[in-house]
Length: 358
Ligand SMILES: NC(=O)c1ccc[n+]([C@@H]2O[C@H](COP(=O)([O-])OP(=O)(O)OC[C@H]3O[C@@H](n4cnc5c(N)ncnc54)[C@H](O)[C@@H]3O)[C@@H](O)[C@H]2O)c1
Ligand SMILES: [Zn+2]
Image (cartoon, rainbow, N blue to C red):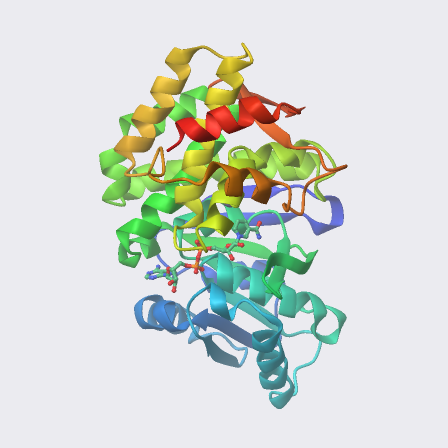
């Protein structure tokens, strides 16, 4: 078992990286979790992963229940939270209870929000089953739901007791979702670690086959990069913003395209935009952009979007909830492995870059 800590003082917690669900009971024990356990999952993950997790929890002394929500972002709202509260009330839970999120980022964000608020906070455990969730959303404590068309606008920071990653759970994940998750993994390489970027490039075929050893290493580096950033800036007052690399353009494309493209696909196009912008600003040379494009293509991710509506995407960027003083902020590369945050106040240049993404 690989163990990686996220060091946050009295909220410090471990991430366990495993190849099955067999050790989860031991992890519950070492987290001193003794009350009722409620596994929250979605209708797809329930079919593919839940039986294995439930049987690993079978010999648990604690009572174990399961609650299934409909799969997909459309469930990420206060109505689902209300139904979860009603279910938890029906079980007459006390504050020793634990919610286990088994699923992707949607299940993780919803379950974490329910755990943060029910009885003013009960235990929360993350068992992420998408690459996006294993590499990104399960680490860092951001939890919440969408509200009236705005993504993640209601939420909190609430750290889990531990994160349990079974890398083999990715074997049942649709390939398009795996590729989209890979975008966040590539992002980690671009923002902080050139060697990791090259490792992904060298092992792309093994990643697609969910090779155990490669996935264990990949997950370990991912978690240590994300944990390292979160440890320094838990509530996103500074450094954590570098994780938004590619997201200024990516989020805007995601909205303009009505969420028909996956998040990872949109930020991949955003990475190319950020490299082009930095290129025009003399911060990075063209050969780095070529390396990024080549890896994204190998990863089966888009590097442009036919018919991209430059004016709409430009306008949409100003609706980002992270915007300050109506100025566009970008995380821009200095090289593969290093970025910095800059305000770019040049409409013409930004539109020129967006035009090149078509
Ligand atoms: N909290 C954070 O820091 C953070 C960071 C990034 C993204 N997010 C959020 O994460 C969400 C996206 O997460 P996601 O991409 O994991 O989406 P998701 O949870 O919707 O999962 C994608 C799809 O894969 C299915 N699935 C999940 N695991 C599976 C498995 N092992 N086998 C078969 N099918 C499986 C799901 O049912 C779903 O249909 C968004 O709501 C986003 O806002 C949160
Ligand atoms: Zn993202």
